[in-house]
Length: 126
Image 1 (cartoon, rainbow, N blue to C red):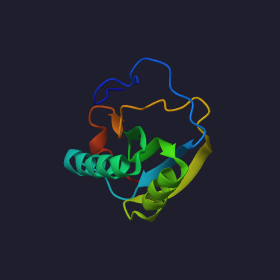
Image 2 (cartoon, one colour):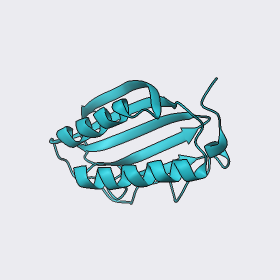
Image 3 (cartoon, rainbow, N blue to C red):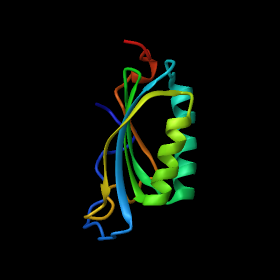
Image 4 (cartoon, one colour):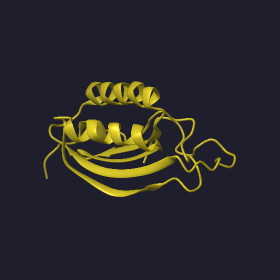
């Protein structure tokens, strides 16, 4: 899998912060996303996440998303609610949600995209 940038967070221990939480979800794109649409979606997510102090990574492949969000529980909740309400996403399923016991894993990433070359041309259907 290729990525925009490295898939490793910056080195160093993550600070412990009980106010942070992790949320992992998966969803399906309602329609295929080309490179421009996927780039626009990621740019909007980066701006929203910065405003909410949320960091994370999103994987996009064959019309499916897997995203790890981390940050203040209220901000992560608002971002998750926004994704659930977004008409571009279907079948949103929360896979994991808990306090971030070890702090942030993606502290320098407001949102990092990982996608196979050509994945942005994948279909939304099965």
